[in-house]
Length: 457
Picture 1 (cartoon, one colour):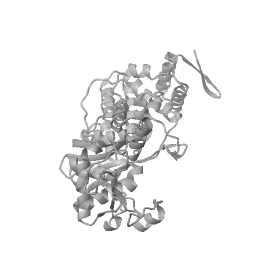
Picture 2: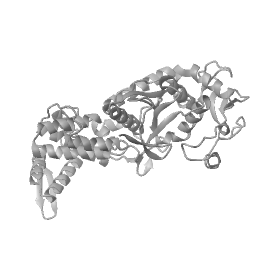
Picture 3: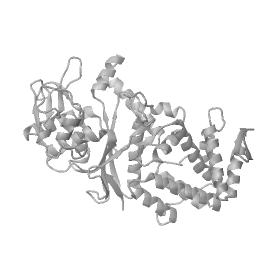
């Protein structure tokens, strides 16, 4: 029985889809004006994991992740580059797809682009004006009237009074309330525009997701996801738009993945402490990055550093080493077997990949002890549900070395620590195995009273 944490209720709830055995899920995707950074990678990988687990659990999943291809930042960047908006967005969509494929992310079932849905956005805005939830200003903009939606602030847990007091809102004399947000922007010279009842213009950011999700999933669907930074105002505004237009519940379960942090600060372009996926993949194997993301619970903050990536590489190396030493046989997933039951319990508990990973390492240890090709096959099959361990072990182990062919120092240290723990629990076979692996990699260990030191042979 799958349970997930619903941001709306702030509780873990049993997941019950609107239609038996079918799941409709929408995730807010990227605004394509630059290369994707590691925060985007977390969204991609987390909801890829969610979709994979839902499918492994027997659900038929319709997964939509949108692309924002019209936006102030896009218009500005295209002008700076001296290229058309279409050229800019297509270039970065291609780059995004390359990055996500490298991370083992399966393509969503639908990847709608905002510019293809402008007529639908105009129709929803007209409906909101007609029922009193929106108004056209005299400057050609159209705004959503937040006071007309009684539940505004429910997702973020704040009242309108709290939001008015706590948010820095740009003063706009055309708004009736400082918290009102734009649905339609009047055209400015040199910007792309579409014809509308309010004159030429283009849609605001929030309206696009309400319309694209309605078109592809209906006016009421199961799961809406995205990064924690979208909870307010983007997702709050989506709810106001969709429920204001249709008069009923928009989404049953809201999911938000946690931030990636660098030196205890959120990774962001404004702080200048972000890393593009491409920068990270220049130093680390893509599967190591995927493993790094999934070894933390999706809702928790994820601390980025080279040391954490090095540790992830060493840990993934241990799993691949188990498969190299005991070649697996293909086995069907038997969800009644001990390790599979534990794995399923973890994943059904709000996609707890931390505990699921622990099962994989326990199973790898059993593979080493028993030398069972069947258990090795189970290890590969369970990891495959997370998009891991799908490569030839020898190819990964060879490719996972440093750029000069040597095992990185951080990985050596991680293996020495694993050996120390094995010796502490008197697992001499594991201790010897780690020493043999290091010896084969040209690393010589020297045990002394002060601990173990190492040098390259």
